[in-house]
Image (cartoon, rainbow, N blue to C red; front, side, top):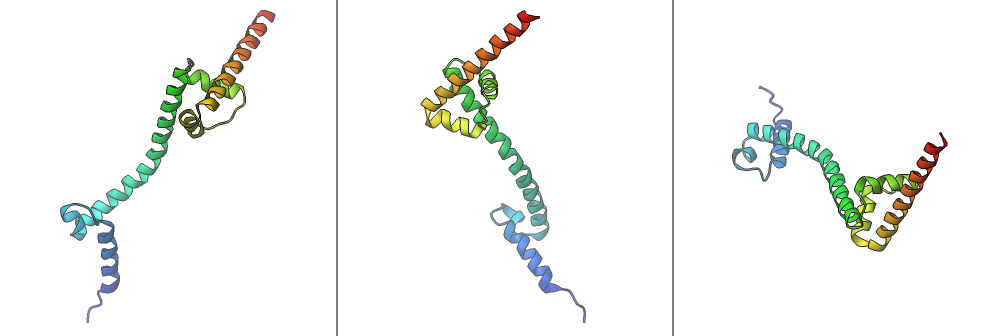
Length: 130
């Protein structure tokens, strides 16, 4: 009598077919196509989790930039001013403030502008001292 390990094989195949549910046509019905489809789906899901982080950062940057432009300062100047003022807020928080609490964002823009002006004045005085 030949041993086929049928229980384990069936379990493995059912697991893959379960993962392939919702795929169109043979990809959800036939095991060979399902293996290929599930392998590709897993690879795309892995890269998608990385891309999601990039896409959110881009969205936050766009929102901060739009809020800054409306207040007469560029995104790069705003971020540089925050760094000079030693305010460590990430882009997610800044984007939420720009949308939900405009008064607080106005204060941040004001703080960033002041820090930039102080840095500019310090650079001028250092240049004239030479």
